[in-house]
Amino acid sequence: MIQRYRSLQKQYPRQFWLLFWGMLISASGNSMIWPFITIFLIQKLDISLTTATLLMTVKSMTILFASLLVGPLVDRFGRKQAMVISVGATSLVYVLMAFGTSLPYFIVLMAFSGLVQPLYRIGADAMIADMLPPEQRVDGYSLMRMINNVGVAIGPMVGGFLAATSYTITFFIGAACLAIFTFIIAFWIRETLDKTALQSTNLGQDFREYTRVFKDSLFMKVCTGFTLAMMGSVQLFVLLGVYGKTNFAMPESQFGLVIAVNALMVVFLQYPVTQFTRKQPPLSVMTAGALLYGLGLGSIALGSNAWHFALSMVILTTGELILVPTTTTLVANLAPANMRGRYMSIYSLTMGIGQGIGPVMGGFLNDNVAPIAIWYGTMVLGLLSMLVFFSLKGKYSQKVSAFST
Image 1 (cartoon, rainbow, N blue to C red):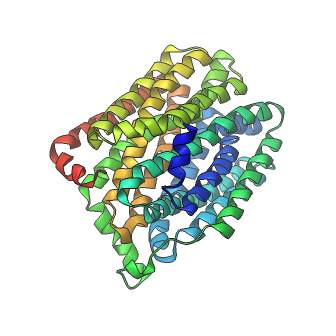
Image 2 (cartoon, one colour):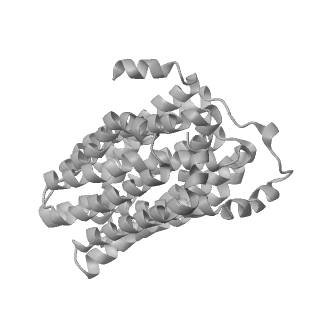
């Protein structure tokens, strides 16, 4: 495997590898914190699970607003500035969280966090599409997912043990990691936007051209199916820690290890899995991936300890390995060069909607039906996602094949 990645190093530009290693630092810092946010909020503010998840909804609402705003800005002014603002501001948010004591304080922080979060993802996805030709994009996005998940493997294991001692220390270390990545982007990453490709004459026209994106029926249906999958999967990462601790006395450290299963699978299996799936019809791959999402999430209802939850994570992650890079690559290939930011903006809404609706739905089921109902609900979302992708196969298979690598 090491030899394989050495050979890959020669195939991609230097800037790609700067983002690659910077992503490791950033993902490690982020994942020290986000798996434990719900537990932290419940303990710090003495609030219900539904109220804690509503804070996630506040964040997701601002993510939705920012995602629509950022796309035209990234297409006109560039990718780099958006990325610097996003990572640097998130570092500041983590520092401020350590000092929070009231619900209004965290509402403001969550809203601000949601405003800046999409800037990095939209900018980075567009930058990678700028740097790489279509035939390299699926591998490029897969490599970024791989290194991101190395960080996600490291972060929760470290964060779980730190959080059991001090959430304040956890927030400070996470913030420091993001500050380092901000420095890397600011001083070593160059802008990749080709401003000569701009076709509109002003920013207002850039926003009006969103109508072209919404009229792309294949793209919008792909986003719908992916949104359903994200609404289900985000509940595992946000709610499983609380579910395990409340119902089965599972400590944060064990939840961190469950999350690490996801990360380690992506690290060691993403690239070889992608080499197989890239040769298959994209819509068939996406249908199978969504099915595994549903089965993995539903199987959590059968578990009662970290080992059971880890097995469920294996099933879900297998779906993730085949669904996420395939979907991201299809979106990148569908987007015209001068509209990549806008396409990536709409695509990023899938995560914002997932983060906003999914946890609240799970919190409501937990508080008003039964804790186990969370996982039956997420299973239904995964199966609905599968049906959306399956329904596209007849009408759009030929069109998708034209865009596949």
